[in-house]
Image (cartoon, rainbow, N blue to C red; front, side, top):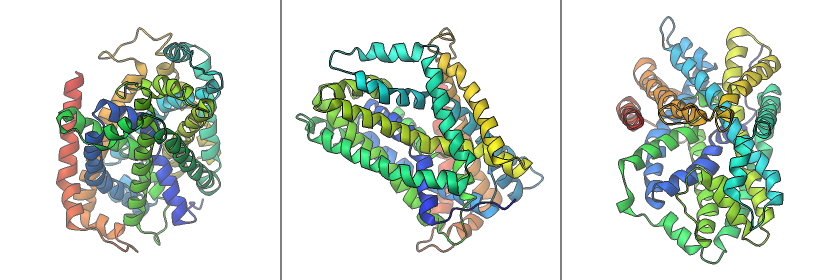
Length: 441
């Protein structure tokens, strides 16, 4: 069976950017920024993106294109008769687990598109959110709808599925976010939000700021979960990896920063708490929208934005597992998509029920969904990133990665990339990972 390729660099950049742009930008980035002091967190996050995110992004793209295989096949191809393929297996597992609970949160966002039509200034938003997530039927329904959309895109293939849908969804995503920014920054009292977001307060720095920044960089760029290796495997030799990675980094960072411009001025304009945590999206923001002129409309398009961003990421996670079955076991793409998608849906049921039937479950004080998230973001992804850096830097060889990345590129990477990849990235990520585990335990 002939392997599909992206038909253009734009198709790849939009797909890889779509993988990176998701709930991490629209849902996670604003509340992590809010709880870490605003502008000072952004400065540290940008450094993490540049000095940790970019080297791993280039490495994963290079691994994928060099081998034209899924994560497991890529490591097997470059290090046969070794156990390095287990790094790829960890990536496949990470994509599987993350998508299972990611779809649950995306389902919440999708349901709020319709709930927005009923919101008003007297709505009890904490109660609305609590009632929704503790229901037995409604979250399962929306989790199922979201997974079905993800499965349908992957089942259609690389060109007719992923590439076609991201070319439609990505421009819509940017259009919606700019519309929200215009409304937000023109609200009376929005200046306080812009100051919080743009003026660094160095007294707000803590070690947690650094750990959250690096964790956010991994989560938002889809690093360590095999998605970028998989997408890179469909990339033509004619395209520049260095430039493509820079575009993906720029698009992803731009959306995260723009989400902040859409959210913080509005939050401050209405005197609400920017450090309200995950509830910022489903409790604080709906309260903000109802107090705006045309608030119902802006609430609706915000949750549409959230859903679109989630879908462009979810398809990359499912593609990781499907590509493995298609490449290594010659499965039919549609069969693999629907079977694995259904299994992921089932694995997503426990975190979904963690607010109702399984509410008594606790692991280190965390509910089921937070437990899934903790293992994925605190252990699986950083471990995958550390081992990928070591593999590319020392086993495959940074010189080979540099040669692959520099093909047809107008700007070349070299010794700085090699230094970061071999020593700085794995050491920094390992330290942050161990600190995070120590803090939790």
